[in-house]
Length: 88
Image (cartoon, rainbow, N blue to C red):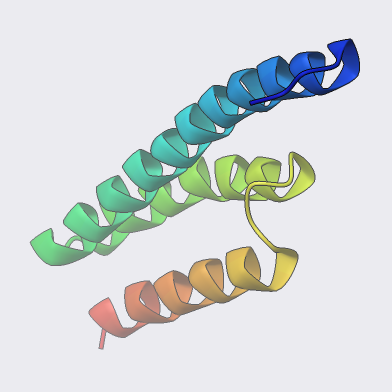
């Protein structure tokens, strides 16, 4: 356990930051799940609308340090590709 004041403060900050990041990750997963569900229905328009709603949320996770930039880009790219295949 932390003994000096600075270490105690850092421990408090870590707990607070962990809760915030957990909430952000959960929110991102929710948006991505909605896209997955829309793809599962087979409706391209609904899936595209869900992806357009999810994309800013995923990229916000990048700027907040929850996701790596390449990870977010890869997820968006793969979802976009799957949506594109729905019309074929």
